[in-house]
Image (cartoon, rainbow over all chains, first blue to last red):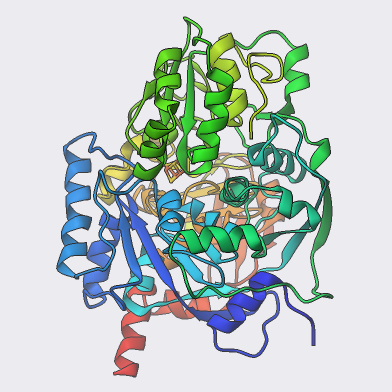
Length: 428
Length: 167
Ligand code: SF4
């Protein structure tokens, strides 16, 4: 009998089977089903056709984050509809503007997602929760409606790529650089339909926020999910979030992987993904040697890099500096709790004194909704996860994906800049 | 699902959901309205030229990006009968199946068929015929469980069917 990967073991348990192999079609029980203010309203009429009720009021969540604070009348109607439904169904976790944040930050923060779960979300970046050792993946609206009503979903058991991490990240290099480096290496379809399993002694050197960022962008390599094993750091995170009953899975020693890729964390450089694909990766050293890339906007936030340590890193670079005159900077903390911590730790002072706009938690400019839409020909350095044509506004705008530190350094310089050279001081 | 017979719109690798239906239109899920913006960021004349039954042919990783079901829905309501590609992004693939929109993985056909060719697709056999060049290709038939979902008219009916069995 072939041995199983982490992902395969979780799916196997949730399908109530003794064993699964890659390629097998299974029906799995779901532990959490999530939709947002774009996908949720579209699911409601489908839910209605399926009987109208959720399978478990503890396990269904709607998060209003994409176009909130409501940017126009239609968005307001959409946010209203999911809230009304959540209240009518008496859902345990009701999310309202002012008390939540971006879905992939708020669910782990509230302890709603954790190790060993099988989770689907009607949002492609649902793969984020793999950082806590969960199987989680993005699906579409019909799938989510079916999941909310039946508590189950069909999956094709994926094969996996194993990333064996060693070493320790240098200063000014973080999870974002790791995942941009990996996508640059394997391509935007390099893990198509597969799991990305991150293991090895290098794991313990990565913060939880680094792991969330890495899993968040698994989808940008085409993957079904990204996943880390649960260690002390993850246990501590889950305990702090109020989780009591998570489950830990490790891959069988001789589990079969499609390929194994060794990543030495100490060799990774600050990395920037050029327009228009997340796989279009260049190290900051390559950027330095070229002509300066002048920019118009910087975005620091999103489900990829809007967490506390991201904002701390950006603030450490910005402290005592001012943003270049040609640049506007949007800082968007991912949740209300992170917003509050920014206030308490004095980060808001640093950002505002430097000349940044400090905004309310939202997806905001990440998908060109509002709060920082780009004009034709504008260039933006963004800590978000996609730089597709038209993603943040005009189709002739250019988006460069980078870490919070590169984004902050670029904000000061007015062009894409190396944080090792601009401002910056030692920080954890 | 009937067979498809139409004119080909050909695109390259990694056609993403942001160009299939840009996020700025996502505050609506009216199929007709979505259809009126289909492919606008990659091919501004697409909606003017596309006719009922036409076929999109593209290369690797079609539909990558967001989970928006608006994407296959926009193409389906714009009249596109079928997408043929080397490979599809996984969420787009699921979504298409779940709304009963035909997609076929066939790298040979995706490589050989040209923009503007007249193409016929037989869904039951998986045969793709380029009428313009006279070439034929064989695509993988849908796996059995997907045929089941498609045969009962999509995932909605499939779930409803299962519930009535349980009750
Ligand atoms: S922050 Fe961006 S990528 Fe994340 S859920 Fe919101 S729109 Fe999607």
